[in-house]
Length: 317
Image (cartoon, rainbow, N blue to C red):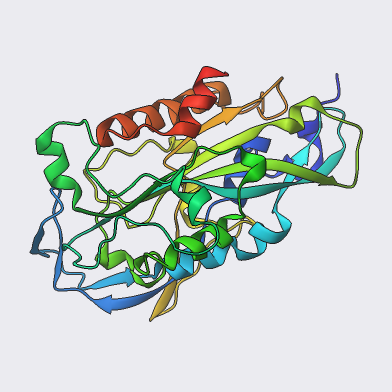
């Protein structure tokens, strides 16, 4: 019988896993939450309505908690265990950068600004930051349901010239403090972030593997999604919602727990060969990638957002 790297101990306990699955698990933010009383919640149109269920508690987290997940990864990269086709294993590191973000609030914010930070990078920043004006092209009825646009950003410069994600967030927060002070209860469920992941180095050092040059663009919610929002995570990947980067189940206590801001969409660039696919996985990972990519397209179309990195990936796929 021919040897398969998927028979090795690294993934032998995870029959439905693949290198792609390990990547998604490694870059999924795990955010600590605090349970707070909740008398009111959002309905499907971004408006307040009385909560009718018997559960009067809701998990609350701050955007600063989300950015905390990226601190170490912004400096050293996100570590992703990769099983090579020859049976060897490496840990590939990926550098995250801010690709795009939209913050919609439930209530209008009087402090909304159309300017960018006035520090030394303001000239460069103004060249690729979308100002806070309504450029949406979607139907007005959909636009009314999104909430109030507080901030949006759309990167266009080369990935190799970008600041680390956390550094960029801190820079933008100087002019837009809500980026670090808002919590998920302040935000419309249409608030989201796109993170670009580019490979930097493997450990141990290995021969050049073309497949390891793959780049990823992941889309994450910044507020707990509502039931009527489109869900695009394949059923096989749904456990990403409740596992951390080590594959352990998230455990919540009586007052604090954790929530996974799992990617609801994704696209790739330079994904060559079969390295990222597990041939033993039911349903096939190729179809899963297409599902994620279609979800990104649908999401951006719904918001009328022309995402530069997404368009680049699609045009070069």
